[in-house]
Image 1 (cartoon, helix red, strand yellow):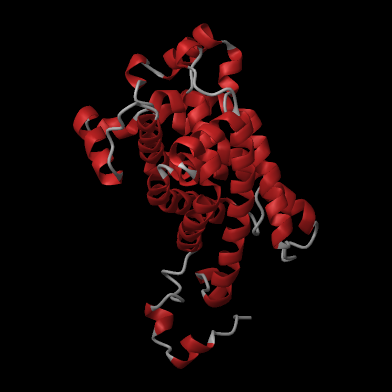
Image 2: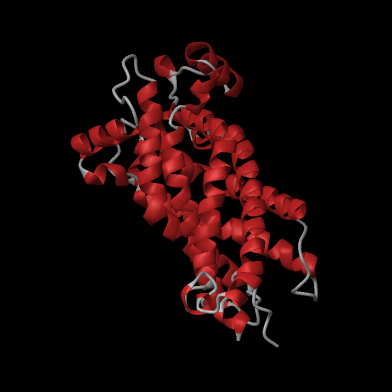
Length: 318
């Protein structure tokens, strides 16, 4: 039985062919892109300070060049030197990038899920594959250039005389100095990081949702529980792939030229700083990512619920 047409489209039937409710345009991937883009902008404004601290600690090396003794020391020195809003340095970079990043992630996941689901259900392998595909998609489209620019901006603030005067000025200087390839440094490490990140996160969240729903696929999952599932998924991803995040950060810093490849960067960190260096910034990253993933899935699910009430896909209309 077809679902009832929302009132605005009942009154204006041509919108069923041309508007947001049109069957051809109203696919799940597009819903994911729109809901994901809105989610990304909101989420990054909430969690950015922890990302700033994490990056500062990961860029901090041993010896005479070491600046911070830990998370609290980094926060204290940043606030003393630049005030509270110093913790938001580089926010514009992530804000410009978070919208297409989250949009491409959820758009890719919903598209892959739509093709791989069997009666709306994903197998264990399909959950991992859909998450992996979503991570690779966001890594290539948005994360690599965004992360490279973000790290260079934060790294620039560590110098005695910062050279970047703003987002567009900074991006222009980076491209002028390093070429367009300068914003795609560490693409291999980023693909590995984001692919594994999203494979783990989507697998955990989707599996926990399936467990909660048990034998009733239509059973709604409370938003606070979705947030709890996201929190667990975020923790799992951090504990599994922080070494990749450290390597990616080093390869995207202002001194990235001293690393010839992802493997070379990993070997130099191991040789010069030991295995513990691969887990630098774990605590701030853990706090940021757990909150990030929890908020992201809660906000995303909320917008998808709204879209699903007013915007039907081809399968839902037929």
